[in-house]
Amino acid sequence: MGGMPIPSRAALVDHLVRTRIAGDVATPRDNNLSHYRKLANGDRHYWLGLELGDRWTDEQDVLAVMAERCGVVDDPGHRTGQDTIDPDLTVDALERMAARLRKAAAGKERVLLATGHPGGLLDVHRATATALRAAGCEIVVIPAGLTADEGYVFQFADVAVLERGATLWHTHSPQPMKAILDGLEREGRPQPDLVVADHGWAGYAGQRGLDSVGYADCNDPALFIGEAEGTVQVTVPLDDHVTDPRFYDPMTAYLLDSAGLTPEA
Image (cartoon, rainbow, N blue to C red; front, side, top):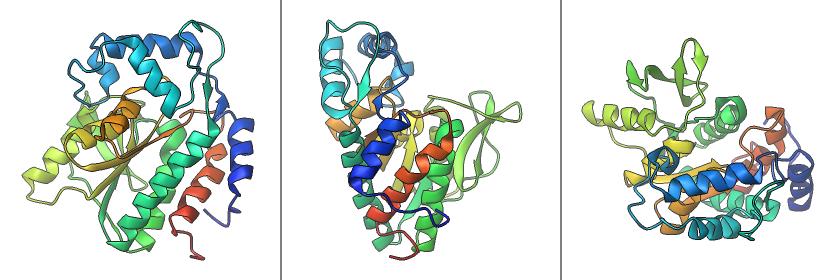
């Protein structure tokens, strides 16, 4: 992280709240509830590559999971206005993710990193890839010429992204991850030992049976449900697009230090 100081847990919690990565986040309550309802109603756009069947058809069950794992307001009567992410849950999840990254480093595993939120999280994933490679992991190189959702799937700074119209694309779709994993299979190459991602990239990888960890906002309940069901190993709650992507740097430094992946470790 270029010499970024490692924050203490308390300092990181303060930083997350101050930058609105957690705490009183920008995502409004009515938007959160709308997404929970659409997931419960079977809108697959909100399933983020997971197969939820008919297990989550009650919006209140979705809200209960989000209150427990993300820290949104648990009162179903709270319909509009402010909603929250519990910063302590964010740091708890970062520490669980760090444990999985530590295991990957110890085993020199094959790791694939991907993001559907390049405007916010690209550098978090890039720094993670750099640290894992320095620890001896193989960063999976995706097959060439992949397409999905009328765009191109390629790697930028070691992170798989979707490109459309010369722009890195914000996408919730599982199709880009499907294209990568199918492409590896066609080439007779092994699947990743670990996927570090977000959105449909993380959900589809977990549904495919791979170890998958990722980040999710409070209006993206599927990955939290995936963690509750054991399909996704870790879901870190955070606002996935704050005003300045550099705000994530202390969080990334804490993650990598907790994983034993800093240069001093």
